[in-house]
Amino acid sequence: MPLDFTAIDFETANGSPASACSVGLAKVRDGQVVDRIGWHIRPPSGHDHFAEWNVRIHGITPEMVLDAPGWVDQLADLQQYIDGDMLVAHNAGFDMGVMRSACIATGLAVPSYTYVCSLQVARRTYHLDSYRLPVVAMAAGFEDFPHHDAVADAEACATIMIHAADRHGAIDLPELAELAGVRIAATIPPAAAAAS
Image (cartoon, rainbow, N blue to C red; front, side, top):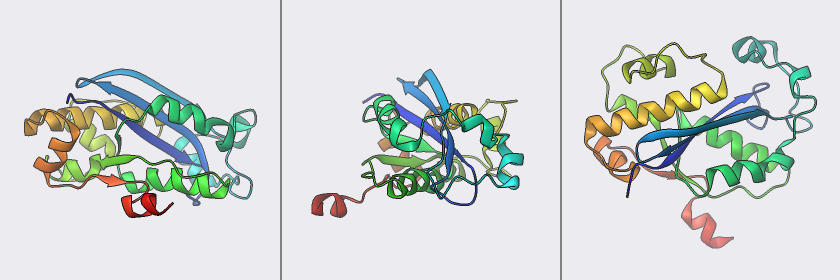
């Protein structure tokens, strides 16, 4: 199995994990970033307040998402792009939590994906003073990108995993997870999926 996966990054409007206002995705095929895409999202009603702190971090304002599709309208596009891939995110618990919370807030079923956290892999691969995305990305040779731009962050995350796989001599994500000693997690635990 080759090193194929989709890296994902969300930005949120406020402290609510359901308040997705931007998503970035980077597609990896055979250990190479072959495509990247991203778009704004109008956060779900009740989760659509833009906190000053968040705006200062990512620069996305309420005006920028006024005409953007909402979560209900764009989840199918997101799933189509992922196309059944294993997902990767830096601090994946946050990004998978955004997906889960946005689905719950809009009454949609939470999609079932397996994923690996590049932050966990980085801690088992590099010896750094910080494991923040820009620092790890620099260690992987991906420098000077606009941090908190969701597409750039997704590509940085993808590059980290490609570089880490090379350092560990892993041919695919399951082998990288095993060699790095991190677990492959699921958005819906297998037991819960079987019960539904």
